[in-house]
Image (cartoon, rainbow, N blue to C red; front, side, top):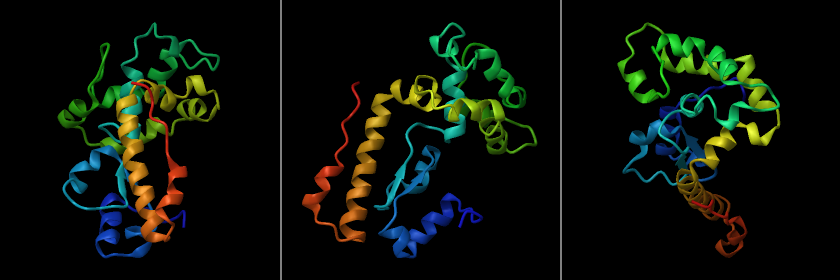
Length: 191
């Protein structure tokens, strides 16, 4: 059902109403900024993506904060710092971002423009230049791999939470014997 788009509140409502596909048989990964919606609640099938921002904002912040001389910008794909800032021009202009680093959460909180911040960042993420980088298959230059390699504590925390959710879904939703779930172990990243 690719034409159906559900937001965080829709997923949580389906879980609260005990719809089995969501409350027992599926794992729902929400953006990290949705933590306040799930904190203190016992959503066993929900896990938050790592980080502190929605994915498009997180990867923008990570790349923006890389120094201009960082080896990431010297890649075979010719995705340089200039190509990045060109692809992110609307984000930079809309949120008055300049300088060597940015705290996206602060810039979004201070934003007084008329555009929806999420839409601005989504346009950057879906831009042709950025999608070329994501789909190139060149792992050393994949921005998500680069972010993950530089954030092992957050990745390990996510993997542990995801593993717990998988174990719950497999044992409760699909009646898989818990002893068989040992095969789902994931090696933590070195910190």
